[in-house]
Amino acid sequence: MHAFIHHALTNYHTKPLGQQHAYAVLLPLIKNNDSYDILYQVRAHHISQPGEVSFPGGKAEANETLMHTAIRETMEELQLPKDAINIIGEIDYLVHGTRTIHCFVGVIDVPSIEHITPNEEVATLFTVPLSHLIDNPPIVYPIKTELVFPKSFPFERIPNEKAYPFHTFPHTIPFYDTYNGHTIWGMTARFTKQFIDIITSDLTHTPDNSH
Image (cartoon, rainbow, N blue to C red; front, side):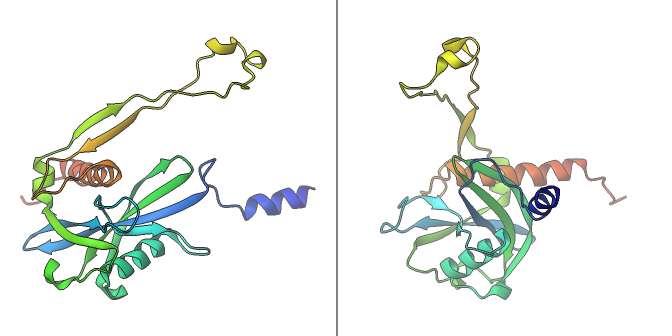
């Protein structure tokens, strides 16, 4: 039994409890003179969540790393060669119900957005200057959640029964100001905000070596 337990745990890869599927997206950057723009796509109307602003991404396949998922989905949706996608790193990921969504950041090596011809899953593409997103943070709306128990839930088996202090977790939904007719909100906005928070915090704590 000891050898069995040791082998099982040695070869086990941890994940959030309850996770059934893992997804990965790419937050794509495009060089714009001395700065960057973030590339967004609008989902086509014949696929799920039509008309929403999103990043390229999708569900991880068997025996595939999450970074490879982000690269593969970007290659497919933006119809780019692999060597045009240069991953910089990964930011914090989301746990959403039974799914985890991971976000990688990478530079798309194209002269401009006009050089990208996306596939049929993408209605249109647009970019937003990174400086604009830094200067115009989103409005973050708190959402109240409630627990709904089935009638058969055995409250009588736990201390304090129905008065037990069950935890509900805070949930927020950010919205950026509409940019050229596009609304960036929800998961895409959360990843955008987290990326900007990370880089601006790093700038704040980086010593000025110009002197």
